[in-house]
Amino acid sequence: MKSERNLIILVFILITNLGFSQNDNGKIPFNALPYYNFEPLTITIGKYQKELLTNDLAELKKIEEKIKNDINNTDIESLYILSIRLYDLGEKDDAFYWFQTAKTRARIFINMLDKEKIGSIGSIAFEIKQFFVSCNQLVGEYMNGCGFNDFEKGLATYEKVKNEVKNIQSYKNVYKNISFIDDSNLETQKEKKEKELSDGIEYFKKNKEEIIKTRIENGIQGKY
Image 1 (cartoon, rainbow, N blue to C red):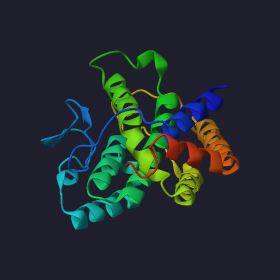
Image 2: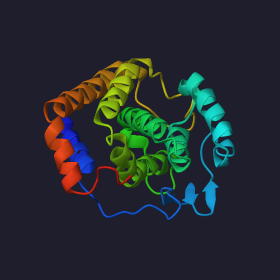
Image 3: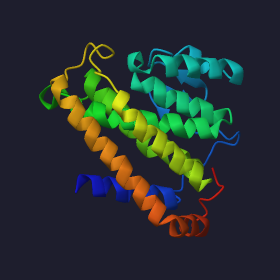
């Protein structure tokens, strides 16, 4: 049931104009204070917070490669922010990939949290979880909007992200101040997420024409 609900939400985002608008310069007007502010650009969270401030695409691509080669030692916040910065600098295909990668890892992260030790406002686990939720809701419109302008590319990205789920490792070394349930649960969570992505891919394949038609009718196709 949870997997079906997530799929319904995803399809809704893919085909619906939620009414957010891009900044005049084509950037995502995302604010999640105190961690991220789009104007003036401010990043105060993550391993690569200083490097991701760059407006030099060549430099950003170097950081992207660095993160790719060390992804299991990189916090998920940095993956989300990398996706935003790539989008802002016009690399929307890469932005979509990193957003989906961040979202997938964030879901498993949340499911691996020790629910009795998450805490509330002010606690690290709670604040990071809320940051992920904000990214999924507010940044997700832009990423899913642009990611399926080319439907086959969007599907290929989902396939790639699904195939990389098996490579996800324990979060404990990256988030030393957060309590997780035992790592013996990690494989189960990965299998659940992989199935969820597989179900989504199959749904998209079966309903391709209808999804594209609805995106066009709703003004989503080519908007982002």
